[in-house]
Length: 121
Image 1 (cartoon, rainbow, N blue to C red):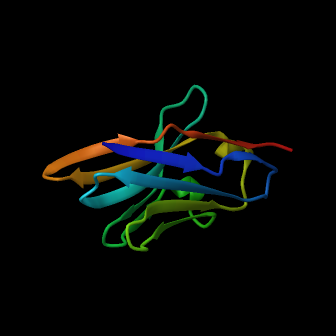
Image 2: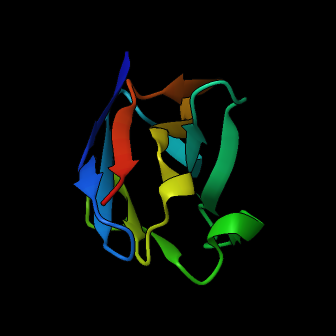
């Protein structure tokens, strides 16, 4: 079984920063991509950023230049970070970690429980 544990959400003022973390654990053979999505009230879940096993990174236009995704490549550690800077009220949402990975010979898609990010003065 695979588990994703997110942390780092909370309240920030406009212009402030927060750092989200997501740790994937379990019977993971390899990871194809680690991603962050967000869902604001009344809106659909949207991709914020992704990083593949080869280091290819994608950002949504709304966060380019303000958010940075990175991955911890330490041995036996599957962790992805999202450094969020120059936060805006419209960044308020529940942020979800998503991982595309292999468990033995089966490919799977896993979601974290979500962490609330609120940007308000």
